[in-house]
Length: 188
Image (cartoon, rainbow, N blue to C red):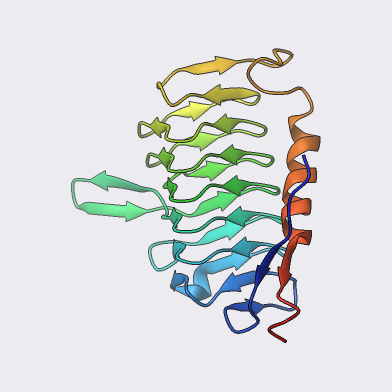
């Protein structure tokens, strides 16, 4: 699947030494606790809550417009505690998604407006459909698809749900997205 070029103005995005492209219109709470491991795109309106606990992403992650990344919490008798969130490599988080998972593996696709409940575990190479709502503490195994209807479908080798080449497709998709996310040449 070929991705069309997306242009941004130099004034709107900050590009770091490690190649991260972060919109100035994002809300990065507790930025000292947020680690983006290189070639990560954080689009306009995204919120990353590093003030609650550490948030780490792998390489070539895409956090789309208006997505919310919030570390998971657990309630105890004496209050609540927040836990670190780790996101693997080549992960795509769709527009408007709200993610409160404890861990997200590599090569994961999270659709538009999906809601990932607190302390969910998304294993490598899984797909969360657009508009899906995962209840807290749900585990989605590798090569499974969580549907908008709330069912988990698939299994390795069942191409109707998750392609066997999911890892290769996500590497290609996220790298292509990054390479086609370009500074507007007219804006200077």
